[in-house]
Length: 259
Image 1: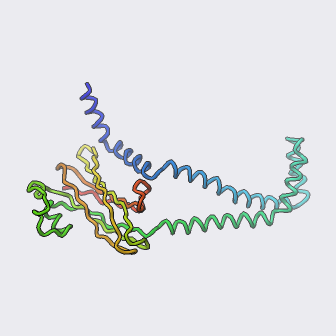
Image 2: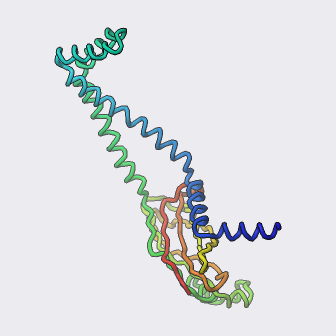
Image 3: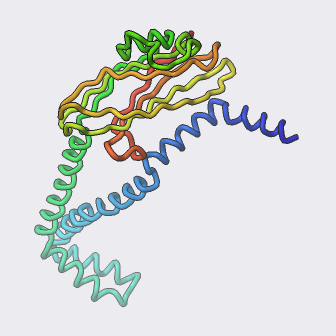
């Protein structure tokens, strides 16, 4: 009974929809999605302040006429007679302060917009990824072509490993405006999907170290091909130095490779 349940749960976890949901939840957790959602809610509330100030200023301009103010006060007093005096004072104050309130509200709105624009440019942060590809080859060919190893036998690998088939991952990364010696965590994830649509994932985590403030990397990784008759796709995520669990600075995904 236990074996049947484990087999059924394994098949369920490997279905495309469940695999997609797992990837979404993993990415949500890695990006601190709860904290980001709280930040969005907080900034949304703050954004209402300049809007309210502008609206208040325009309301004061509209109610600048004594007759309009009197009609508004009379309408409110008809529903809430005790508030008639309070409403009259508020409306009168709005009419006196409307120009300054409108200017302050517009200034805050434009300042917030400028901050978001320039903040987005700063968040662009000089990391670019291009051309993520998969290419099959033997492990020996990978070591010679990607690692520039002329004598692979001295590396300590067995003959079986050297003859094994691997998928070489190639991608280009460009870093601009950082500091020399910065260490960027990079996560390379290989997804394999069989004919039934079941997906499996394998990950490699490496560190890319900059040799200069502006640096370029023709980067490589590899995965031993675990099985045949499946399709493969690779994704690459580059993270901020010292923050491997934060939201990726850049991500790229290859097209499907079918042997």
